[in-house]
Amino acid sequence: MKAIILAAGYATRLYPLTKNFPKPLLEVGGKTILDHLLEQIKSIADIDGVYVVTNHRFYGHFADWACENKVIQAGLETEILNDGTTSNDDRLGAVGDIQFAIDAREIADDVLVLAADNILLFSLHKLVNTFNSNPVSHIAVRHNPDYDDRKRRGNVQLDEDNRVMQFIEKPDRPISEWSASPVYIYPASILPCFEEYIANGGNPDAPGHFLEWLHTCETVYAYDIDGGVLDIGNRESLAEARAFFQSKDG
Image (cartoon, rainbow, N blue to C red; front, top):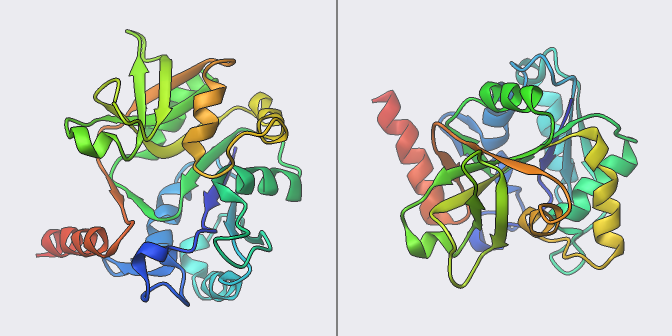
């Protein structure tokens, strides 16, 4: 299994903090957001390679991070990929960057896809084990009673076996109390679907748009995470994440 970490965004909601610095390398709890992800990934024996996809503007920052964080990466092959974009205007989008990584390194393995601006408060081990026992596409979901918050995320309707029956990205009217988190596992057999989706005019921006399409033609299951996700999208959520770790240390 390979891991693809999506880190090519420009984090405009955090300007000026991230105007010239990538959000995934901001410090939270004494380490970078990306370090938090790598520490989880490196403990999973199934994963034998990680590709961090970034843009041309921030590539140098990630290259420096890779040189300076050998302890974090120890035992795990980690490569920084430059998708060549320079601004929000020419970005490939999350789905486009997944396809970029697949093409750039000719990936033909199962793939774990993560967003580089999330800190996971649940074990990836359990998700990978669930996938291994049922090797079809899986997405992470959580029960979310906040109606307005559900409008800002992928919204999922499940059957009694946790199979995805309907998926809507950022719905005006949520269809359930299940919200998707940006954690996905795709079997190798599904990887050609990314190229098909993009070639047919699919929205390459948010990864949820791909799931809207995929669940209508392939089996997708949901994994109910047994913890939260610190989604760092603006100054308020960054402050909340830092406060969370400060309270733990205290």
